[in-house]
Amino acid sequence: MTQAQDIPTRCQTFQLQLMAALEAAWKTIEATNDPAAIRQARDQAKAIGELAAMARKVALILPTPRGKPQLAETAAAGLHAAQGVANVSAMLMTPPPADAPVAAPVAAQAEPSRRALDKLKGGRRGRL
Image (cartoon, helix red, strand yellow):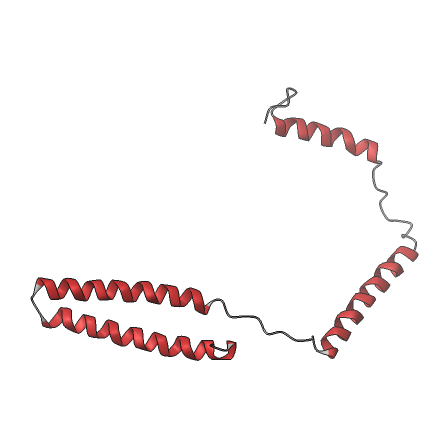
């Protein structure tokens, strides 16, 4: 059974074998005028291409490395999250400045939103 570490090297050797076989089929096509030999070499080249496509799909199935995350990475992520929470709580505790614009009441925003939604639907009839 092939180990996960061996997959890239096996794919590389398999690719080299496929390229060598394709070169041999190409030389056969160049060297002869016999239609049967050319047809056979073309069939070989087609089969090599199908094998190469399947090998690419298999090579993409490499498993991700497993293991516990590094302690430093975990600690840094936790510290970052804690700082974010501290920043948000500090923002909530500070009162807004006196010259800050006051947000419009929700009821005043509802009517323009409803009209815009009606326009999107195609008028008062609610068609999409």
